Length: 81
Image (cartoon, rainbow, N blue to C red; front, side, top):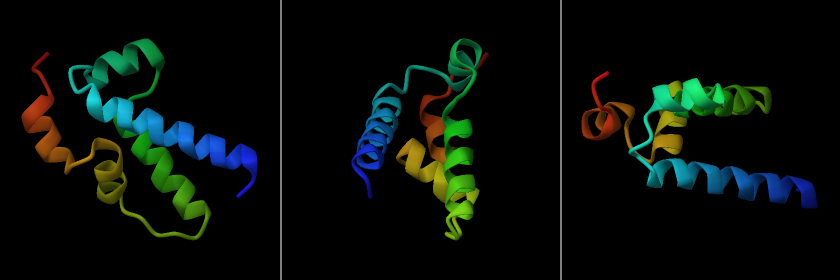
């Protein structure tokens, strides 16, 4: 891994940790303000893994981004709109 890739990987881990720590920020709010949400990030992760020849399911990618099963996160943190 090059120096730039190591920095990018560290920034990605920091972003994921930030999203996990800030559960009050709803996905819909992220989508409206930033144009992406936790689900987008997990989808991109799974797609990039596939490009690298690594098979990872949507649920596995979501678990990585959410820090728990997606359904558990929704039940615990998602607020009604």
